[in-house]
Length: 484
Image 1 (cartoon, rainbow, N blue to C red):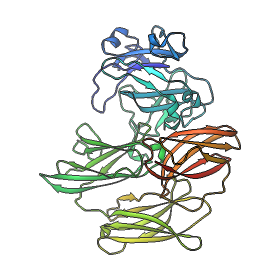
Image 2 (tube, helix red, strand yellow):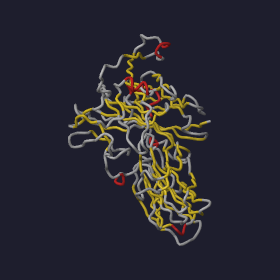
Image 3 (spheres, one colour):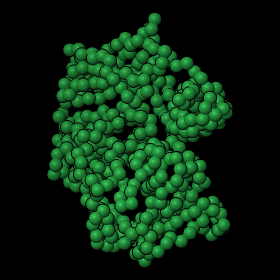
C-alpha cells in the first residue's frame, strides 16, 4: 500500500487539488506543466505542511511497537517516485484507491481487468492497517474486513502506459472512464459535461413551503427510493442565489446536510433565507459521488403528498394496493410501478387524481405471482413535479433451495447464519423489513457446501421483525428473524 497524508493546504470552494511527482510535470502530450499544488517527492515541503507518502508491505519483521502495525512493515519509497498506482494481479480490480477524511472512508475507486463492482476478496481478507496521521488529523485503523459491503465506483478497462482514469463530469456517479488520446484531462480544470443528462439512482421527494421575510421559508425533502447499496445517502441543501440559476456555483449559499442511513430515515425540514429564494439539493451516495443536483422552485404552493401506502392480500391471486394522500387537489395522476428486483421499475397502470380537496385514498388491484414483486407509486402533480411513495414487496417467495439456518434468533448486534450452497459463487444478502421494503444489502462470495456468514446490524436495522434473503445464481432462500 501507498498511504498519502495530504499536505495541509487551502483549496478554493468547488476548486481542484492536484498532486504530482514533480513540479513542473508532464502529462498526455503536455510538458513542464505547473498546474500542481504539491509534489509528493518534495519531502521538506510535505513535512512542513503535515503531509507524507509512505509505503507498507504485508510483513511482521518490524515490531508493532516500532511502526504501529503488527502485520505490515514500512519500506522506503524510491527517490523521485512517479507511479503510486501500482497494478495488482488477480481476477478482481487491478487498481484499488480508498479516500478518507479524518479516518472516515469517503470514496472507493476500482479500476482494471475483471470489472469488479465490489471490493475484491484479496483486499477484504487483509489484516487491519494502522495509519499514523500528522498534525491535528486523528490516527485511525483501516479495517478491510468491513469493506465487503462498500459500494465503490469502478471502470472495467486497464489503463495504458500514458494515461489513467478520469470523470467525464466532475464528481458525478457513474461517469468514470479510461482516459486516452481521445478522452483527455487537464489538471486543475473542469472536465465539462452536462450533469442534467445523468439519470439519478436516488429518488428524492422535495418541496418548498413559502413563509415570511422574518421567519423564512421551509424546504421539506426525503429519500423515497434507492438501492440499499447507495446508503448512507447525504443530502446537501443550498440557497440558489448564485450567478447561474439552477446550477451550483460559487455564489450559492450552503445551508445544511442531512444523512439517511436507510430509506425510512427522514423526512427533513430546513428553514432558509431569503424566503423567496429557490433551493438546490445535492445528493451523494455511499460511493462518495454526486448522484444528482435538484432545483426546487419556490412557488408558494403546498403540494400533494403521500400519507400512507399499504398492500393487503385479497381472495384468489390478487393484492389490493392502497395509498393515501393529503392536498389531493394539487395532484395530476399516479402511476403504479412494478419491479422484480427492487431496483428496475416499469409502469403497469395510471390512476388519475380525483377532484376532491384535502385527503383522499386510492387503490389498485395487483395480480399476485409466485415470485416476490415490488410496487411503488409515482406521483405527478399539476406542475409535473414527480415524487414517489415508499416501496412494498408482495407475493410469495420463489421456490427455495440452499439450506439457510440462523445461529441465533432473536438477533442482537450480529446476524450469524449458515448457508449450504450447491456451487461456489457470488451471493447477495438482502434484509427486508416487515413491510417488504429492502433496508440492507451486501454482496459476498460463498463456497460449495457449508458457509457461515456474519452481518453487523448496528446502524443498519433497528428493533423489529425482518426477513433475511440469500441469493446465488444457483440457490435462493429466506427466513424471518427478530432484531432486538
